Amino acid sequence: MNSNTKSIVLASVAVLSWSTVATAFKIALSQLTYFEMLLVACITAFMIFTVWMTVERKWGQLRKVSPKLWGTFALLGLLNPVCYYLVLFKSYSFLPAQVAQPINYMWPIVLLVLLAIFDKQPIPGRKYIGMVMSLGGVAFISLGGKGITGDLSPVGLGLAAFSALLWATYWMFNNRLKDSVDECVSLFLSFLFGTVYMCIAACFMPVDISSWSGILAGMYIGGFEIGIPFIGFGMAIRITSNPALINQMCYLSPFMSLFFIAVILGEPIMLTTYIGLFLIVAGIVYNQYFAVPSGKPKRQLS
Image (cartoon, rainbow, N blue to C red; front, side, top):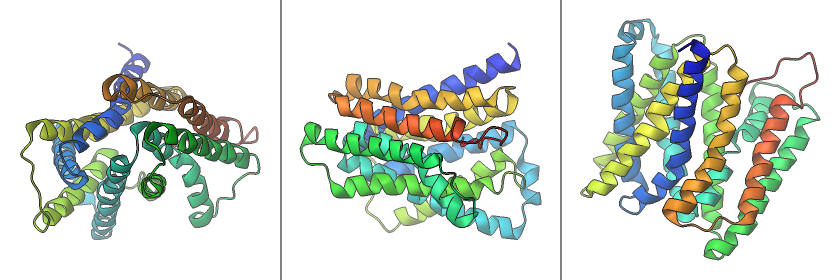
């Protein structure tokens, strides 16, 4: 198997994994609180990244991490996994899966705004078209979601949007470290601190993880939302000669997710969900591949 074929296989595993997690979130939330779910998922993901550090023989690189970078990862670990996933999981407790998932998916649009504010990267005029398309998609999904459960929770919608902001913020700051810290070490340190924070918090919160189905669902999330796809997709990007193709495969995930939501959760997928999700993805794709003037490099968001 050549490197390009291997990269497609790895990316396919990651995309398929991400396609199932919206359904897994709702199943786990029927057995655990959103805090308990993240506690199990975080410990599971940390164990996977620990094994990955061992397989890749990266432990020696920890000695090269400066005290300042340790402090940076202490903050990043609070941002992701702790704050990001707590907010994301809580939004799923308020909203149908087909509403929460696409709203969270619009993080690349939020990233454009953050880069303009913090990195002084002006937003090209053409990219406002993609932003409007994606925001219109969110509006479609929000309106259509009323046909599933009645009026949607404003708190849930706000949390789903806030989760997109948190992930875009994490991506922006973590991306600045890619030339300083190996990706494997970066994930390990983020989840090391995240797991420590969650375990400390668990000492002061009521935690009842007695349901084996809930534990297994939480472990599935830790493995197939975080651990395995993060590793697989990162490896796919590194070994492929066509990173654009690997990035584009990510856009299949939210559409495939609707299949699992409908079949396993039994949610009737609204026409407005399909339209809204199409507009969100179309806006992201337009901004990434068509809104940049010819001759200028296109920024990869994955």
